[in-house]
Every structure is written in structure tokens, then in C-alpha cells.
Image (cartoon, rainbow, N blue to C red):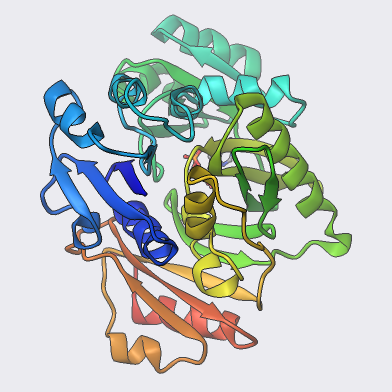
Length: 361
Ligand code: AMP
């Protein structure tokens, strides 16, 4: 079975590393000839608005998917017109727009903090007056790793917000004084079967995920069950096939949904080493119509993202229970170049050691 993946980044690379042993083969589409997935499958290099390149990519595929949620919708729709795509372009469209995500959360009864869209300078001012400060303004589209965001604490921030964020449609949200951030990674098969991974606790530094620890502290398992229920409702509403992640703030012991990712997710990387069947394998299984695999954790795990810096492999691998994953990317400030997952009783101490060995640049 030949799987086509829009995007050839590290997520695509890890999908292929999980799918090859299942008998799947991979073809990637990416604008860069240096895409990290080039080492694990065929790479079609082209721009997402090049219809001919997209058609060359689609020819002969059995199923298509995407690993990057900012794939232009028109490109996904063109491919989906020729070959079955999981998840659907509709799920991609929802995940590309912070407002659509929030409306979907509300529609299916998932708790969210107050928000308002703003399509002009005047609307920013009136939304700020209605919601009250402090707020966080986010571009509705194309934001990731904390980019396209601005915290509004004073009237002066409100006055410059529209211009500073580039004069594009925004979502204004109340700034949540959360206790912690958690996420659930879940998978839905073509027949509607559903599986969720243990709740994961995430730590961000300057808007970029630095660390994910799983299973998250969750006395009685209440939050994990609720997060899985929420993910299931969202995925059922979208007729979703494949892996998705939903990120939440925990406030007063309750979950508030922040955003969803219609793809395998960084907060699920620990599942490669810490779970019986990883998020990457389960995404492959789901889109190929195969039975889903077990999602239970093997042992407590902590994943540390390597951001802008590649540590010495020997020093990392000396740590008990350490698994090193490098993406084949040149280090640049703020760029995720790999991750380390520590599995077992020493995971927390090991993660501290990795963070010291590989400072964020
Ligand atoms: P996002 O791109 O929405 O995931 O935001 C990146 C990070 O910014 C989140 O993981 C939070 O740490 C922080 N953040 C985003 N939205 C809010 C909010 N409404 N209140 C407080 N912190 C936020």
C-alpha cells in the first residue's frame, strides 16, 4: 500500500518509520528538497500551488494524509479529489482556523474560555472592551509555536495589536491563569473505533513545547476520561479518521480546550518509546483500515524537545531509559531538531539532565 503524505517534516518521517514495518510505503510532498522525510520515502518537491506537481504526487497512491496543518486547503482538496484522504480536508479546514476550532468545541459541549473574533482594528477594541483585559490575541490562521500571538495587558497593547499582528483576522481570548496544560492524543479508525492515549502534561517555554510527561497526574483518572470523551465527540462530529490531539488548560481542576491538531502531535512523541503502539503506528493503522493498536503506557515517560541545539548522542544515551530521536535538520534558533524520551522510574531526573545538556537556543 502506497501512502501519500502532504508535508515532509519530522512528523512525516516518524509516520514512515512506524508504517514501513506494517508493509506500507511512503511518498511525501514538500516544497523543500531537504525535507526530513526524504530519507524514509520518495519525495516529490513542489510548491503547494503547483497543480501538476500535486497530480504527479497523487498518481498511484492508495491513500493520502497530511502531517502539517498549514497545507493550503486547495492543495489538500486537489489531492482528495483523486485519492481517499484521511483525515478529510474538512477536518484540516477546521484545524487551520482557531475560530472554527473553538466553535466546534462549543458545539459538541467541550468547555472553552471566553473568546471573540476580530476582523479590524475597531473590532479588536470593541472585543477588548467586552471581554476585559488581560487577553491574548492570536492570528486565526498560520500560527504555531507561539508565533502570531500577542498578550494584551494594557490599553496601549490593544491600540497596536491589529497593526503588530499584520492586519489579519484575529481571535481574542481571555488569558487563562491555568494550573497546568495537558493534552490528549486519540485515534479513530475507518469503522469508528476509537482509542485514546493517557493524558499528557505539557510545559511550554516562550510558546514552544519543551516537555511532555505522561501519564499526567490525574487522581481517579477523571480528567483523562473526560479529555478522551471530548476528543471522541470532536472526532465523531468531523467523521475523523486518524490521529488528532486536543490541548487543554486545567483551571480549578476543570478542562478548558485551547486548540486541536488534526494530525499526529508533538505531545504524543513519547508514545514511540513509552507505549505499546505509538501515535504514528496508530495513524498508519487507521488510515490503512487496519485494526488500532493498544494505547496503554508501558511506563512513566518524559519527552524533551531539542530546540535549536543537538546534544552529544553519547551523553544522552548514557542516561537510563533514554531514547534519542534526531530529525536530520540543521539547528537554528527556535527550531525543533529532535527529541529525547526517557522511559521508566528515572524519567524525571533524566529529563532534567537532557534539558541541561541541550539548552534552548
Ligand atoms: P497556542 O498556540 O494556542 O497553543 O498557544 C501557545 C501557548 O501560549 C499555550 O500553550 C499557552 O502556554 C499559551 N497560551 C495560549 N493561549 C492562552 C490563553 N488563552 N491563556 C493563557 N495562556 C495561553
